[in-house]
Length: 92
Image (cartoon, rainbow, N blue to C red; front, top):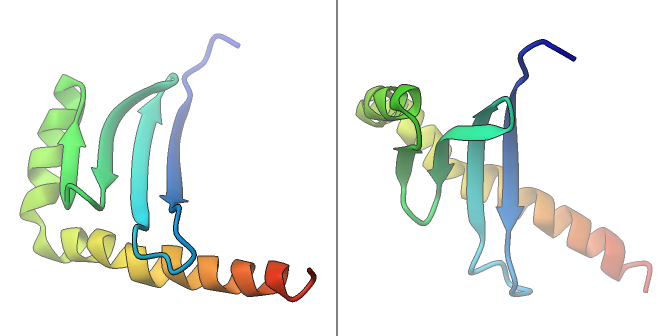
């Protein structure tokens, strides 16, 4: 209980059935505080602490890493949402 807790949380958010408003969020947290986050609507990392701002600056300069994060809206979010939507729709 007196240790440190670091985790990464990815989530996909959408409201439309065609997924045209899909947003991918990739958050990094330490002891329940988000210190850096990628949001696909922003298109780059944003830091919320000194450590997060430092890493956001580095990660935003890495064009390969940034392009992978941007592509996750299609590769990860929309791909999985389509699979889940069809699985649910087939059962109703």
